[in-house]
Length: 60
Image 1: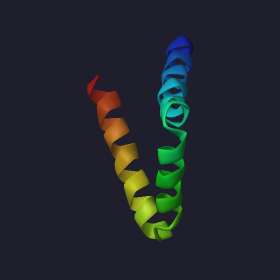
Image 2: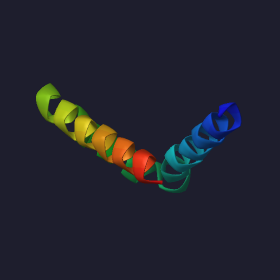
Image 3: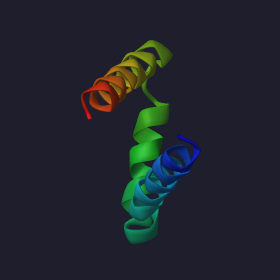
């Protein structure tokens, strides 16, 4: 179980780091737009992502 957790973390870091590395200006614009959203909307989006992640985790 421990190795799988580190593997999953490594994959997340690779995916999260790819976009700012390839397109830093567009990534900055996206972050600027996200910071202008109301906190409750960000919370809803994040909640959806968590639910999708849990569903994927359970089904795989």
